[in-house]
Length: 203
Length: 203
Image 1 (cartoon, chains in turn blue, red):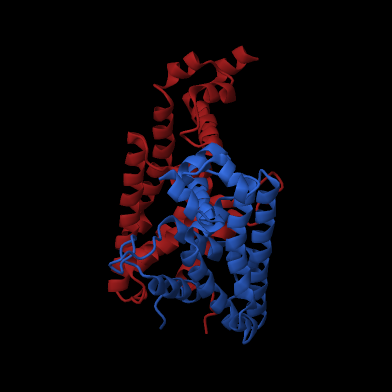
Image 2: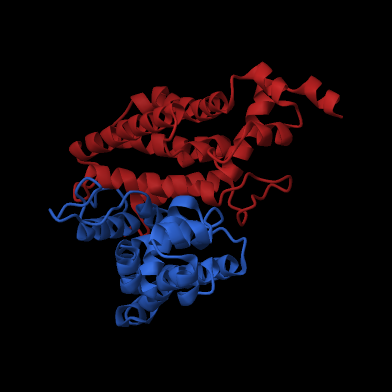
């Protein structure tokens, strides 16, 4: 069994196992021994792929960050009014969060004790600033309310979006998610409606 | 010094220290030894006050839960339209979260390995259901949008509110908080505006 597993191991599958272990035990609480056991391969096999657990962390959070920053380069994030671009980015953020759930979950849990963690926090902040800038532009263009300070509004909107990692589980084979049946499209629409229109019924 | 400290120790100050340690190390990762060191009193002195760390956890999360459930008994949470009561409850939730920051933070991190943790999760769920019921009533009364499913909307609104523990720090002696100067009143107003009206400018 061990041999069979080793044969089929790729950096991609190792990364996926490592992310699960990091989420369950915390990055600080994870040793190479834990990773070796979870992956079912020897430590030296892991070192064949990566230099250590920090490289695995870096690859994992890079995957989430690349997807998030990638949104900002998409056509609809670059064209149209700031409010339209902002709505597009919010919707895509929710999509990326659900599509890359373990990677984004890990990114959101990073606390900053190692160089890689501090780098990840810095990149997260840079992404937040890009979205905050969009919000500021939308307010300047008169499409977004000006009575909530931009940084505070950004924090609260990110808070709502990021909280999805706490309960969203991908759709099972029966087409229903583990979270009361809310599908991806339903979650994206709900976030967009609440972030832009709020709970109050449009009169 | 140790004697002086012991003399001034009360169950209240011990609880406050324990909550900080639980938040920093995680409840599972905290031993009586850690609590003893952080409090600067012997383990036997701690056992003089409480039966162990689980009792400290129970007292800490009870404090947060009592404050939260207390909101629902307040006059404005019981009178008026469901939408008015809901807005009152949302504002008060944010106030309680900021006033009882460490206790609510701990409550939100509880994961459910011990009996006390499972009890706390159950109580949190019961509180969520009370708020979801208010939202449902407000939708039935026609004051809240019906195009976002109640449970999903409740999750997202709680997500926004609960995320405040990640960045809000109480006001310092200079009257500015550690989080870019957003004061309590500003945060409460921002949440109420975004939850009910969203980002879009009222036309």
